[in-house]
Amino acid sequence: MADATPSRTPPEGATGCLALANGDVLWGRGFGAEGAAVGEVCFNTAMTGYQEVMTDPSYAGQIITFTFPHIGNVGANPDDVEGLNPHALGCIVREDVTDPSNFRATHRFDGWLRNNGRIGLAGIDTRALTRAIRVQGAPNGVIAHASDGRFDVDALIEQARTWPGLEGMDLAKQVSSTQSYKWEDGLWSAGEGYATHAANPDGPHVVAIDFGLKRNILRNLVAAGARLTVVPATATFDEVMAHQPDGVFLSNGPGDPAATGAYAVPVIRELLAISKPIFGICLGHQLLGLAVGGKTSKMHQGHRGANHPVKRTDDGRVEITSMNHGFAVETESLPANVEPTHFSLFDGSLAGLRLTDKPAFSVQYHPEASPGPQDSHYLFEQFVSQLERGV
Image (tube, rainbow, N blue to C red; front, side, top):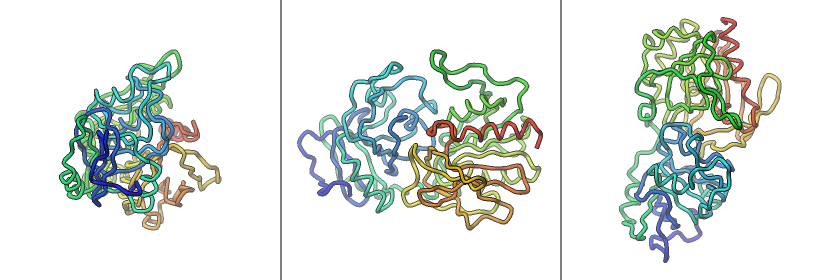
């Protein structure tokens, strides 16, 4: 698929491979943990932030191809993580991981992957693989690493062929917290690290429904002045309201929004019925879209990277955003009381919406990831300010 002549016979020195559902096998040098993992092969265009990408719960079930060739040269550290553990299954890179060159690094990236049970594959023509994904769509594949260079290629291809794919798959339950908890930490600053116990004790109370949330979203809500309680993805309307929230946040997360919506959408509809203020990001945006009667569909290749331009409909300004999604809300499916607020300038897909008769809005992209670097931080301030005003 990616190389000019993908072969089932490993070349000399190959210790890793990517076996695709169409029978192609790409050979390279394995690093990180040994083993094999099956998932959807996608690509991410960010130049850095790879540790945050690997630990983002939204990447559950996916193998990441990094288009930037030098991944790993800033190392890894215990702070730049978005979840307790890595959720991406593995990563594919062009060049071998080098020694880190960053004052915050505590580990080499390959060692960090090995310690966390995740597979890496180097020496792949990531440009060719990315072009193939753009043309043919994101394939199912198996990433494998064996230091002895021995692989059961036919078994790997069959595993890729029989994997059901992300469409119709609910992964939020797998990555969500299983119990409620308070969150108080704020943003990172040089010389200080992450602010601890930074939540405003008198700020509006936000209940965040965890469909696979990123920690930096919580930090930004705290920085905007909110108090936070996180609840599991499967929390019922009564369980959410038992915390007496001033507003509800719908988090990002992995998988098919229609599958997660089977239990999440009824809760969101009840929240809308009592006009509870709602803010959603990524999967939360898609679930809000479903709750108001819209439809979602799987994208051809998805949007993943830190350089995605988004245009606001109210003033025409462009935000440089970070995105990570393989599903989208279909604009034409939205009812009359829903107003599009943002569109992707890459393909025109919907990137934000708001209700005209309820205090609810959402965006498809990740304002907490700071690619602009702070083009979109106003969304957190907008939500918390709305709660402070009681509207």
